[in-house]
Length: 118
Image 1 (cartoon, rainbow, N blue to C red):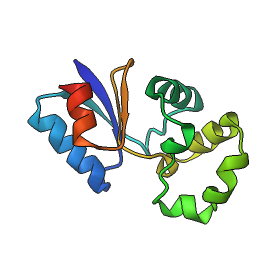
Image 2 (cartoon, rainbow, N blue to C red):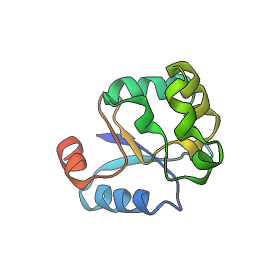
Image 3 (tube, rainbow, N blue to C red):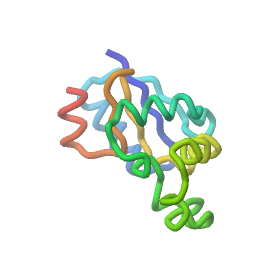
């Protein structure tokens, strides 16, 4: 099984996730979220596969999120507008995203990874 590992190379959480994948022998395709930002359609598919609220896909600790004052703006935005915004800038997206096309994990929690990818 090969999963897509959508990450940002300087992200410490992504490095921990990558180490976990390596240590557990999980094959992955490495995708830089800034160079290859997922499209609105891809993000919609990820969102639907995740079962998570769309706001979880935002990197709330990022500078861009704070600059755009998204904490105040997101509640009044439609899903469509939020997906459009996420697709416009990889730095707005919570990472890493790991998916095999059916399941998806967002961010890195060892317990979630063990449950989904072992």
